Length: 173
Image 1 (cartoon, rainbow, N blue to C red):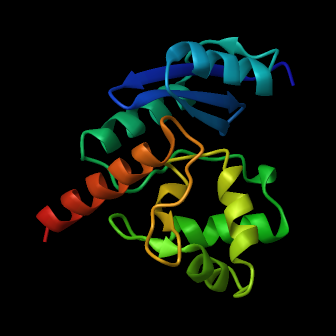
Image 2: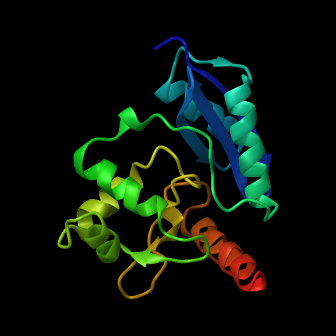
């Protein structure tokens, strides 16, 4: 579609670009640099224009608040038509995983109603179009290992995000 708009935010762990279509976010690209974020947007949405409508401004504001430790729940609307069937169930279950917590791929599969589908959950996580807002970094291996992360700097960023949330959650009790 040619009516997508996008803008980006850089912070110490990478660059996040948001794409919006009408009244919903349609993708978050979490990359290492502004150049990589821009290239990802062009790959997924070659006709998208760089601008910052109110929805993108709000998404960037909420992500900034998250990285400042001031936001734990996101309210920006997402394009749910990007999900169907099992993917939608997994994404809905994942959004309910509390800030500062982790679940295993198997536990998330069970929460989504398919207890034997841990590998399928991994595939859903690797193609999550909304990293951070749909917190795929909160899903870990059954042995407690961090596992893979397809966003900026890979598993190093995933480990940082888990520690970041756990430390803030622990400090608020």
